[in-house]
Length: 184
Image 1 (tube, helix red, strand yellow):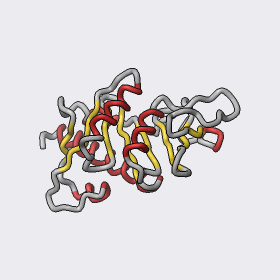
Image 2: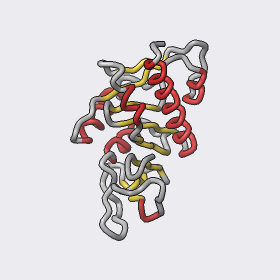
Image 3: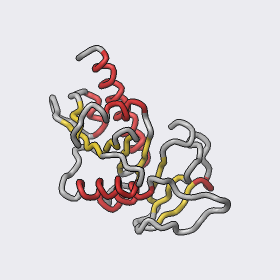
Image 4: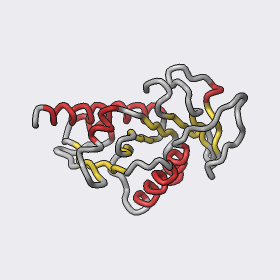
């Protein structure tokens, strides 16, 4: 994650989660850079200094409420994620049937996998609302979603799983951008 872009969260207990403070360099985080958040999205206790939770806290809150097995959620600004979010005008992006999909839990021969793409809104609460509305009726095929021109969100049962999902999604998106350049 570049500089202060993106945000990370993890659940410590069954109710609250900890999220990175806004404006913190993700390569230099320390314990004071995480803020505890209640299930209703409110700050449990404010750490010392002038820190506020990430602007995308509402997205993390929705993911945890929709997927109780989720113990971590990462939001990453990535060039290829933003580019591939433009490869479709619709609300899904079909992924190529690459072997790397196994890293997202897809273990089928020639799989047909699509991920959800959401509109970007200046008011992040609207993005969170869109995610809630869609995923209450449609179960995502993988634990990754895209926000058009904004980035990717991944969630899973551990921080290790989510880190891997982000890396695998990034690899697939880089492949898609490269394939488009050479028209395959």
